[in-house]
Image (tube, rainbow, N blue to C red; front, top):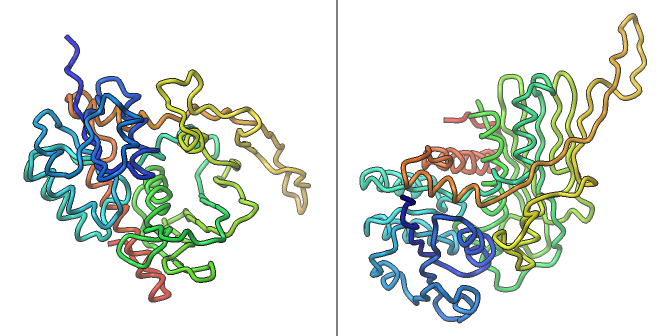
Length: 361
């Protein structure tokens, strides 16, 4: 017999909750978005009339049917809300970042372990189509040994957003905590833990109170991973640039799911969810373009071709959580995985303050 759907409570119906969580949860078989905590507005009730809208966390936790709670609130509240939910015997998914500090994240991870509850952090960008394509390409060996990996989140938002909590000075704010977890998690998924970290975390826009740009380098014995984000790129560069001993892969543009979700589209209603047009596919180059032979060294013949981008689907994250709860799969984004991301963030901050390379410990 099929399992009874997991009853999910969503805490927060702001941008993250309404855009990146509710429509994805709603699109996963075996999950039921049963309750939404929205403190004042009625937009959640209008968007999801089958869900019960509550006004406080205590009301949410009073619903015995809710077994999985998703925390999609401002970053500085992640740890306290997750703690209360774990103590109430619920499994918990936290929107990235895990918490404002590594110490708080460790406390929550230890609490989940001691109470034998599932705990995960929403690293949905592992289910970007271009990243899935890159994972497959790296694993295939077509690039040879990867020696340089560069990943960008370039945006153009020169004006500050009045009242936006992410742009205020405080714990867990700024672009490093907003976009950094995605870039770091993807790099660690590809290459594992680095030997050392260097970071440059900075404020570029006039009047900025929280960091709005960063450069992080993960140092491996024979590889460098460069992770970059800025709010002042009016003409963004490639999203991925990967060089190996046999060739290179360059991919421009971001996965289309975010823009589709912002437009109000839902994966359950789409037949081509997460698919890119062929014009957006990345390019694999093997050998050297126009490289003449010289000094007795033969030229390597060049082969260049487009690599079809796999369809991205953020539902894969919640499908894995569902299967882990049912005992059918190992959890993909474990607390340990999420803690390593937090550790890299703090080492990058330390490196930026001290202007030096910091060993990964």
